[in-house]
Image (cartoon, rainbow, N blue to C red; front, side, top):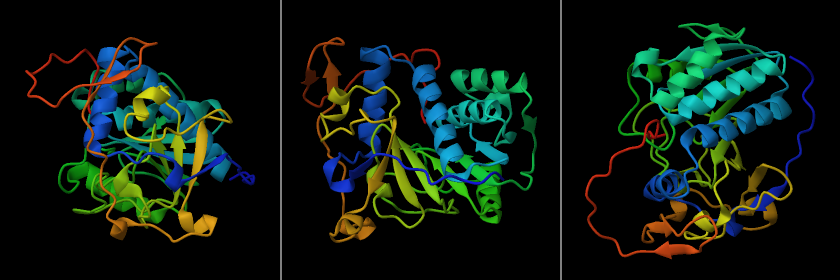
Length: 288
């Protein structure tokens, strides 16, 4: 492992940005794809590049294991694996299922990885860092099967960096229904999730710009500002001389009405909650 530099990222207080619930993030994703036509592949590429950057700056690894699931979180991990390999890191990718079970965009990312000098393995080998891109905000019940096995395997690594949330941690409630990753750092996407706030499994918390316009996040509260870089360190209030917050702080999702965006340059438009008929999903739009 190369000598890690003292990574320095712009910082924001946890009290100065919005914390989103799972339903809020589902709506953000819907607005991005359906209203703004900023598609999953674009957000996934931004997530993967920023995850690789954070890993390089925090750990400076010579070797890395990237564990990926079948949805958008796994696709971000595959993009990160590519960027790490481009930076000279010897990368091994471990998947929870075969490519046939992956979403369209994640399968596309996997096809790219297959054509690169990146190893594929069932069992994660020793490495300088374990990158967790197994499960994002779509956790339902305890992890099972290969996902659970890879989460268990993460305990054998000194450095563990999670994408969006430590796999196995419920991003809405902060509960852990089964096995879960204990991360040394977590890179959450677009805005932090309420279940991560002060949670001991999260480690150092960072938030990454994945191209979500500030106006989308501002419908739920203050948006992170990425003028000084695409990654921000989220500082707990204890680090700023205040009282530490955590799962016991009873942080709740904003619970605001869904947002409709009136074109790229129009203001966000609230609409009254109402039953919606099922909408056809655009190709490649899958849960995280």
